Length: 191
Image (tube, rainbow, N blue to C red; front, side):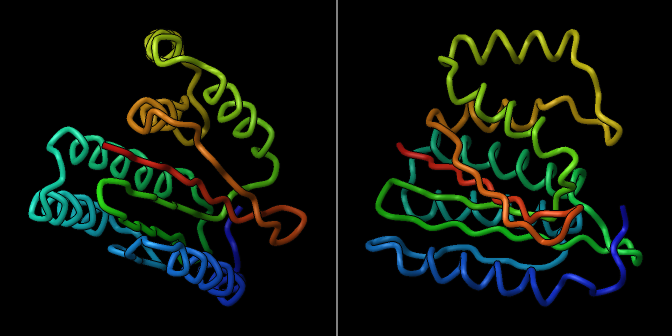
């Protein structure tokens, strides 16, 4: 479903500003990346590479930096591929990253169709109950037998994010109207 030009952007901006405020008030954490708006492939590449460079310059372990890079690539590609678009083809979403010593919190969000919400909740809840070995097995099973969605996904991006984060994935849906919600996923990365 394509949205009328700028139909929801003011509402999405309010949601983003609330998230940004919550992230900025997270005691001891420093906001290191914040973007609200469109995500072109060039911007995704730049954000991933810039975050990787910044982490390495600040002394983050290479293994943590690689995990962050994978999470960002998968999360931002999911945003680009599965987020709903306006009639103009623009897609609105957000990325927030905070840092506290060796801990990082990432939040990625986009407009999401309510009709797909149950399937996404079931996948995320299922992943949160699995051990890392079970997730690896599930990844291989989906890779071999996965059924693609109408937008080309089989959940591999979220499975990869869960593997790389090694903790439960938190998420939230903010209702926008009877057809759409704003989906946010929270990913914690620790050294």
